Amino acid sequence: MFRRRAVAALLFALVASRSTPAQERPSAAAADVPVVGLAGITFRVSDLDKARGYYNGVLGLPVAFTVKDRNGATSVFYKINDDQYVETIGDLKAGEINRQARIMIQSSDLKRLNALYTERGLNPSPIMTGPDGNPVFRVIGPDDAKLDFIQYVAGSQQSALRGKMLDPRRITTHLWHVGIYTKDRATVAPFYEQKLGFARGRDLPGGRGEYLETPSSDRNIETKYPPLDPNDPATRPRYEREVMGAVQHMGIEVADMRATRDLVQERGKYTDLQVRAHVGNNRHWLMHVFDPDGSRTEILETAVQPDSVPSMSVMAPGKAVAPPIVPTTPGVIPWP
Image 1 (cartoon, rainbow, N blue to C red):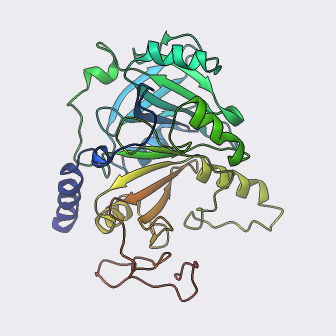
Image 2: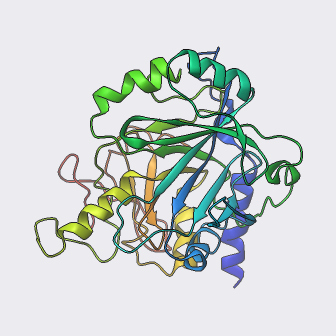
């Protein structure tokens, strides 16, 4: 018990000391677009209670509030920080491949942004008030990406919770990026860069360092249990569904991957493989965990690793601190 509390206290001290750590990093995105950054992501789930066991129980995100949309569907909002939330909506049917309902992007001037996107031919929806009490409009992106632009206003659920529910159990205080499925990345860059005004087609304005990923596929399912053989016709549809769950993901930032890994492993009762952390090609420690419906959470450590730790190096499993397991073949994860 003492060790669990010590790990939790260490992790909280590390993440709390940074609050929203990427806010200090400058953004090269167009300054004329009144976008602050990511407001959140909405995952479709089959069971709200099971989802709560993951988002609250494992990730430690507090249940902030619950709303119903105009069709009566229930949504649960989990708080990351005062500006960012994860939403789950319980309308996922068995076998459905698409588990991302929308991406939420925060604006500082929603009326001006709506007018700007109208001028650019994006056909934004009219501004209306969402169930959470905030004005919002939608833009449909390539491959039916649902992008909701929102501005927090007095009297809304989020505004009422500013400075509150900043639970020390959170493993993260920053939603760093989100993944949006796209068939052809080359065709979507003009939309995100020239139309939406995101630098390099991915970097959001606002100075918080947040960005979009637009993959067509994602093989980061090697730590999902049980593993599936992509060449087995009997499980191929399920494999393709798991791949989409990896594509439509959220990336969250942590200050200490080792402490995070140990805490997540303890909370989720995961095996060493399921919480395997490795150095990605982006030079950050990465770890992939999945909600009960297969939507991926990519956990990234803030620090960039030195060149002395090659890409694909694996953090040694177990509680004892040991040197990373270095790949013997470049680009191939060496364990297990």
